Image (cartoon, rainbow, N blue to C red):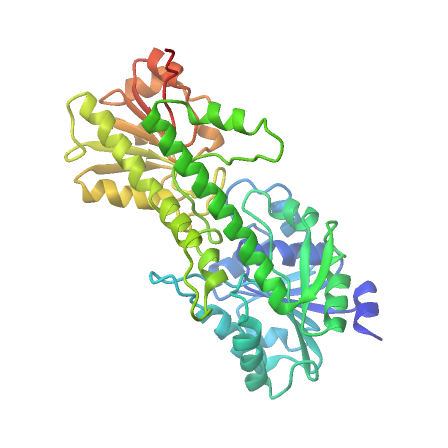
Length: 440
């Protein structure tokens, strides 16, 4: 029976390497679609949690905890630390992290290890799909040679290779997996066809066929596009501060013009994708020096430092310095209602404030060890700094906030608090991109 026919009949066994945010979502979705799925994960505690039917991700993930409980109970999804459990898999998805180093060069250690280990056990005719975001050319330069060497087989002969980059984000894992379009880049046309058949069992969005390199390019380009647009919004926010107008009002009025979509300015860009994918896009291109992309990365990386300077300005207004002050940072994840702290702007501002001599208190309703009662955790701080737009920080009781702080200083990096409300509550307030209307 042809692979596509076996997929339609749910007669293929599927392996998923890496059970983080992406891997656990796709593994659960495929298991929920009727496939027998084995997930391989190096973290034993995560494996144990999944096999116990518990979601390994904190934060709000609609539908995912219930789906994991269902598919593990039915044994459609089983997690393991042993690559040998993938020996009978017909399709294997690779969902490991692909970070960049401090020099902005990709770190593909996890991907290389996954390819080596999988190559030793994968069977004849297996379809391997890399879902991790990778630099253009990575499948050809890294994945194929490693799989061929470890397995002793040739691509398009003893195994097939595809790249279908994920398009999910924390808080919307199953929703994005189901609704967003995907690019099915294959090592040949037949592989792309099989990928479309597989993903159609869980994806309602459009499925486009391409080659592997095009798929690699599309994912890194789309995140770079977003990074550049966020950088423009952040720079516009800084200009609005300097001129003395409200960024949000300027943004709203600009966006009334057709075809305009100015993003929100914010306290920084985090997560596993956007801070690194621009560097993946331009990696390995000899003789090319990125100008716009590098400038956008620098602007977005600078925002936590700017937030620290807003804190410094507010404290100076009441005669205090950052040195010796106690400062409360509200939110440590990079994204609202998530426990994901990868490349969090909060981590960067905490480092700046500590370097300047402050004691920093941190609260986050989703991130251990910073959970617990907000008010008791930030009691006695000289300033509160909103870094994440968690639901729990919406509609803050400003009177209570002022009562637990030692000094009435509030700095908002996520457009949570209105300037007028902060002033009415008696705060010395600073907000990213905030200014006051100037009537002549």
